[in-house]
Length: 296
Image (cartoon, rainbow, N blue to C red; front, side):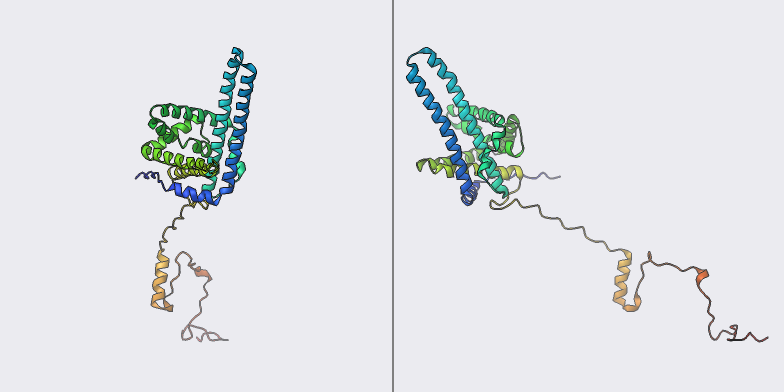
């Protein structure tokens, strides 16, 4: 049995993602605005709290010790929101690829159970950060090999560690192309920052949809159109009909003419002998005359 060859990562998914987001830009941009607003409010509140504590506490050591757990808590909150909204954007991307209706509320799908996404975000983020400190290249390798973690958690409901292992197993044979795609997607996402950070609400979804399209090609093994539902597999032709002996004989009799009709041997019913009346022929010498008896 020949194994099905694995599909390759195609960088054309970036252009396909642009067209997909362009046709559905309203929910994607609104979801980005909601995410930015939520994270901005949290970040602003934390910054205000730090400034207020600094003004009130001055040089008091107790205030400094109090700021450390607050900073850790604030970091976890921001990281949780980031992981949740990333998962939500991947959820929107997968729905758009399937041809389903995409709504702004889809970005909150991970809010129902944020802990697994926070756990995955912490593991991947920490590993990527360590790699970035080692001359950047290891960081991009880690990020490229784990870019399917959130799509796997959304699509296949995998646990964080299982999703990380599965993502690495899928992308390891194409590690170079995975790193290139992640780098180009990150570059596309950062372009929006040059337009007063407003364009990032459009470019960030393009980056995530690009990765989701690569996920479609490698995991679903089905290149569904970006503007419609996934195509169903083509129906197989029914098995060829093998004619029976009766059908062959019937066809031959039709070629010979109307007198050559052949009956199906399975449907022919032989009459019983006792039910067949004997009618003598007119020229039979032994047949009695009508109305009389045979002469002596």
